[in-house]
Image (cartoon, rainbow, N blue to C red; front, side, top):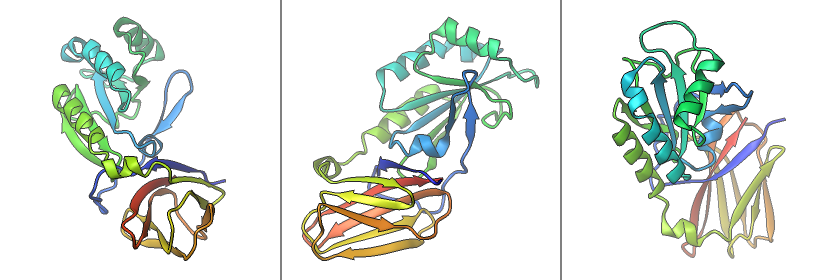
Length: 239
C-alpha cells in the first residue's frame, strides 16, 4: 500500500529539476528513516558526516547537539564513519559517541555505505524541504546550521494564515478540508513539473477528494487556488 506523507510547502519558489535521490538509513535501534520522509515533514534536514577518528568532529560534536536541541524545527542526523580508515564502524562505536556527547537530539547511525563521506570529515549537507535540493554542502558546521535556520524562516505569513485549510491523504487520494469558497482549482504536480491531476470544484464541500489514478514514488506538490486571492501549495510524499 502506498502511503502519503503530508507537509507544508515552504518558500515562494520551486526548483523543479534538482530533486535529490532518496536514501534510507537504519540506526542501531532498528529505527529507519529516509531523506524523502524527513523532508516531507516540512522541516529542513541537516546530515553531518562525522568521523570517529576526526579531532574536528569531536571538538564540534557538543555544539551540534546543543544547536539541534535548541532548533527543533530542523532535523539533524549524524552519519557516522571513520575518516582515516575504510573499516565499517560498529554499533558500539555509535553508542559510545552518543553517550560521550549526549547526542539525544541527533539521529545517529553507521554510514556503512559512506554515502555522505566525501573529501574527509566533517562534512555537512543541508536539504531544503521546499524543493528537495541540497541548500548547502561543505565542511563548515556554522554555515550549515545558519543555512538550515534560514530555511525555517522562509515560511510565509500567508501560509500561516491559511492554517484552517488542511490536507490528509491515504489509499491513493488526497482529502482537502475547509476549502475557501469556490470555484477552486486543485493541481497535483510532480517535482519535474508534470501535472499529474487537475480538478475543479465549483462549490467545494467541507471535504473534497482528489484521486490519483497513476503515480510513481516521490514527492509531489498540491496547488490549491481560487479567483479571490487564496493560493497555497502543500507537499505530499508518495511511496
